[in-house]
Amino acid sequence: MSYADQYVAVASTGVYFAGLACFKAAAGQMPELRGARPVHLPFALTTHGLRVTGAVVLMSGALLQGGHRS
Image 1 (cartoon, rainbow, N blue to C red):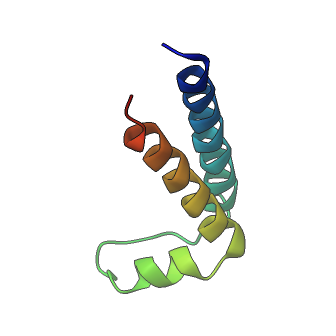
Image 2: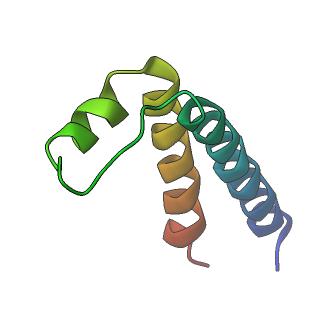
């Protein structure tokens, strides 16, 4: 494994966990979600800036982990 591969592995994991931390911190402020109101879920997830930021960063880290091929 080259140094570039190791750097990408460490960076992608760091990005993923940073996004997870943001999303988890914002999720504590989310209203209770129920299965009887499926339309409410996208609204609840997209109306708080930290939740959106956390989700985007988390997905970026996941894509970076899965998208890097040697």
